[in-house]
Length: 271
Image 1 (tube, rainbow, N blue to C red):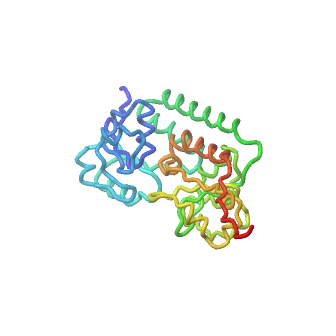
Image 2 (image 1 turned 45 degrees about the vertical axis):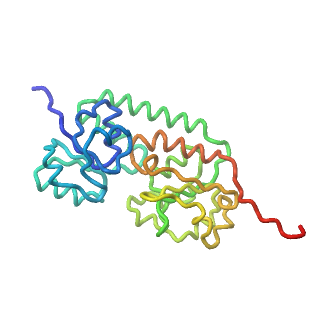
Image 3 (image 1 turned 90 degrees about the horizontal axis):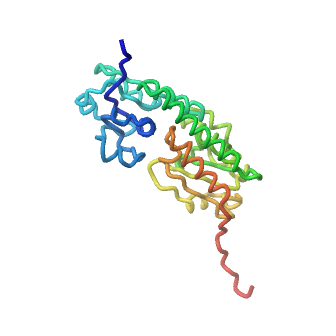
């Protein structure tokens, strides 16, 4: 008997939606997350049935999916309700660059597109190799901030992409924590490590460089002194899928090589 693959899939996060579109398998998607922005056409073509922490269970059941795809323990409650309702649910938990590539290959196999998945993974690996080759000779020290209150540093795949782009993540030891709680810090080490560049992607709200620069003691940090504080859109870097390995890593590299923009100092009277 020929293999049967899921024909109706609900994607509770953006990265699986983007992956299925890149594989040319978007016809299988019958529902997406409301946070999905990649690809833009997905928002026009597919009904939105969830946020990140909540889902419209009845609406999902009405769509009669063969498979529901989610991400991480944060969607455990959603998945539990859907499993109780009799649906097949797969929760991915990729936290590193290699795990992202593995997720893409696994998803491709699940929909009978293994060869397409191999080609997609190869293209993403080639892009990362090109970024690595173009990395600056002098590796700037980098602090990546995922949230500001409390301060949370970058997760593992972000830390790895900083390194691939040519930077040195000053809090790379915290990146190994899969939970955000393990990456909370008070800022002391950032001041001590003196990063050359500060990158921010506050999931759900706009990054405020002036707010970061105003923190006590942060005026001594080279990145603050030289005006090298930059925002990366969450959709480009905080979704553990193709976006982070393409636009996200290249955006990081652009910012690592951008010129300084020191704040103009007011001239003293008589100087």
